[in-house]
Image (cartoon, rainbow, N blue to C red; front, side, top):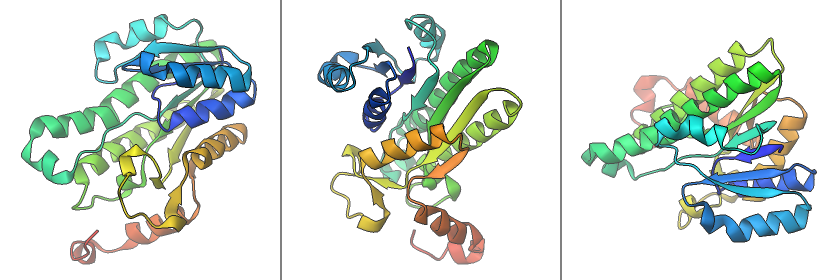
Length: 240
């Protein structure tokens, strides 16, 4: 067993890409039975074993048993876990905010930390965490989601530094806008919006090249460099 993906979208495309490279695939989701069509499609296209597993990012007590229940400890784990409420919902409903924080930070960080420990004990492995450019600076329109992603990005950075002298690699992926169900209906600029296949190819390439942090479209790196440099007094007057 080579690759484990801990959510169906957008990592289903990444699973297809790794399957095409000859990796066996494990797909994990809260309702894995809904992925049967995708499982069969990946197995047929890639001619590799593909299995389905139940996983709930909010059920921390079940994380150890989830890993123990896998057929084999994977070589690569890809995590694209997360939710994104409207900011006004998070402001009005603490439970909604808690879900966003736990789904985007707590759950992904803790499960990847557990995989990291096992990879370190084995002596090798690759962890891929899909974070967000939203975590690079707090914006009025999505600061709960952005704060959670900022925490996840910091966690991945710390994990990478902790494991720097081992053969366990940690890759942080910042896709920017991606054309998925989460962004359906949004008026997104084409130059800044990646397709799921583009994200998948960027991840596979970065894993192969042993990269640490990537923006799927490099233009996002320049955009975020400018945004981070804006003085706070000016930033507060911008409608971002």
